Amino acid sequence: MSRKVLYTALVLLAFSGFMLHYRIHFFMVPDPLNPEVLVFDSARFLSNLFPLIDLILVSALFASKRTATYGYLLNGIIVIYGTVFMSHYSIAELTARSAPAVDWVFKSTIPDIGIAWADFFTGKALYDFYQRI
Image (tube, rainbow, N blue to C red; front, side, top):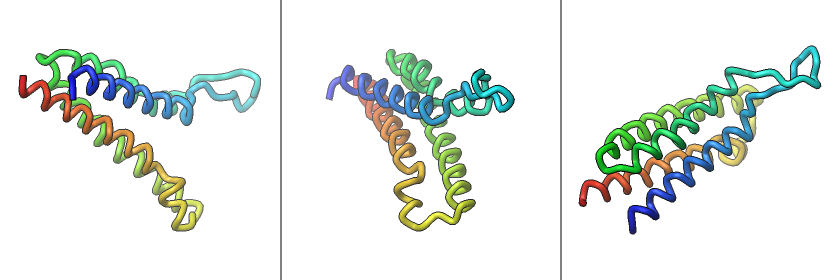
């Protein structure tokens, strides 16, 4: 597999993760006192921060062989944090409403975590490619 294909896959996975977070955790929310006015919600913005760092910084670091090691490290940290955060909030929400067992698979963040790990393994393949050349 070529470097360009792996890099494109890495960027597309990061972009997909960012767009997923942006859609689910949109940080401009209606004001409780005046629903017609949108206000900035910093907590929702923070949930978009990791995917944005992944999209911009990690992709930039993987663009060069000299900085790919830092991209690999940062990508791994983001995926581990993302896995912990998404698992925590999914478990907390599903236990709070006593969800049936089938919801633990289909209405959890398992698909989102899968996207994050696919992004990591694509970065790993790109890092290994750089190590061979």
